[in-house]
Amino acid sequence: MTNPVITEVTDRVVARSRESRGAYLERVRRAGAELRERGPARGRLGCANLAHGFAAAPAEDKLDLRGTAKPGVAIVTSYNDMLSAHQPYETYPPELKRAVRAAGGVAQVAGGVPAMCDGITQGRAGMELSLYSRDVIAMATAIALSHDMFDAALLLGVCDKIVPGLLVGALHFGHLPAIFVPAGPMTSGLPNKVKARARQSFAEGKIGRLEMLDAEAASYHSPGTCTFYGTANSNQLLMEVMGLHLPGATFVNPHTELRHALTAAAARRAVEITPHGEDYTPVAEIVDEKAIVNAVVALLASGGSTNHTMHLVAMAAAAGIELTWDDMAALSKVVPLITRMYPNGQADVNHFQAAGGMAVFIGDLLDAGLLHEDVLTVAGRGLGLYRSAPALKEGALVWEERTEPSADTEVLRPVAEPFSPDGGIHMLSGNLGRAVSKVSAVKPAHLVIEAPAKVFDDQLDLLAAFERGELDGQDFVAVVRYQGPRANGMPELHKLTPPLAVLLDRGQKVAIVTDGRMSGASGKVPAAIHLSPEAADGGPIALVRDGDVIRLDSAAGTLTVLADLTGRTPEGAPLTDEQWAGTGRELFASFRRTVGPAERGASVFGGAA
Image (tube, rainbow, N blue to C red; front, side, top):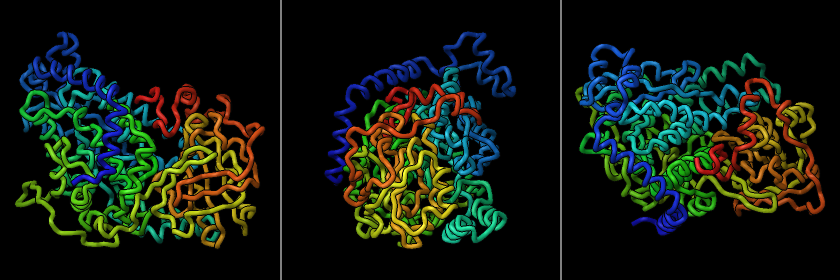
């Protein structure tokens, strides 16, 4: 039986979205009906149009593309060989094409989308383009699919903004089936506890650059997703819970036999669910209100990335669904935290997979009534299909239902014995606005802090103050403002975690309040992030002064400045367009003027992605 709060929140989302969702479905169902009636999409192209579409195809594909007997499958790829998570995609197009052909279709790489690495750009000017890249990826996906040659799409993406962007773009072609094809995490490297200790030692000046680089290189060492549970792996977990991966495909390592088998299976399934088969499954019907609520539940239960408090809002909007932070707050009160993955613990996603992975995670949440089972997925009707894990038996790919419980309750626990009774992400509100707090990695003793503010308008100023020793021996709340989407693209401020963690370990009470982001790697420092309204949009954070006492109570969900802000005028200011230049930032000046607030998804698409 579904938990009554899950039902109540879902009903509220359905009622709130009735008009927008109805209009969306009417549009995509009309397009889907046309596809089903008239055969493969390319059959409606003029001769010159179609000739352009197959001019460079190999001979056997050219014959098929001239005709309309076989469905066309688009491959939209985020491949580059700089991102470890995306490097495995180099070999996917030929693998997918062979599998599509064997299944009776014909596949083409329809386009590529940019894929930047937040790990490389942390603390750099390029990070100020990161969040904007999600909407660029959505537009690039739309451009790839706009050729109107295709009956289904295979989406190749893993990290941060790439997966949300691909899905937003695909949902604007919601009449097409779409399957995400993951690449999997790299094998485990340097233990996370050792890596974290090295970072703090480097921040304190106890080790040098070469030793620090050796530690990082031992952590990030091969093709595949980084193994900590940040936004990239949160993306992957959510795509499976939403039914957009094949069951169990999420955390299988790259370049293994099972990984190749799952890649080929995704291609075959894409052909089976086109409008011209018996199992037509458009992505618009998969991503409904129940799937969105399931995604929020999975995010909370896994202690996933705070970035998804924005990405899920934007993805839902692309399907005509209005999701709010209030919905997330209500769900957080009844969804327990049942995983511990770094930074919420010492394990990584490979340990999670070994403990039982997605089959156990989804199965336990289903049994507890915390997920909607009656949903459509790329594998068929019912989330119960995702209780099964893939395996190779005599060279053949099979799915076997997992009936055993978690093999390691230090990593993955049953709902009845959670790490915490409520979700790992809390929503905060108060006279500074609304914010997000990731509490799954924060010790209970640090959930409440009341201390004077130290105000910074740039993260580099805080780092410099730490290096000068100006933050030593005192309790404080670091207020880092003018870091919101309208100010400078809302960069992640992950560089601030090691120095603040050093002060925390010394016994100081410290926290951070910001209109910027800290991602899935925010760690053990208490933080109120994504503060909305942001400083650049008239938010009260612009009125805070050094010494104002701030109370951050992540347990109660409140964020309050204990000072009278009446009559104050804003201090500081976002960079001007002239100052916000270099590293290509000037190309995105129009995004700064049109982007919406964090709680509406931080989208440039007018609040409805």
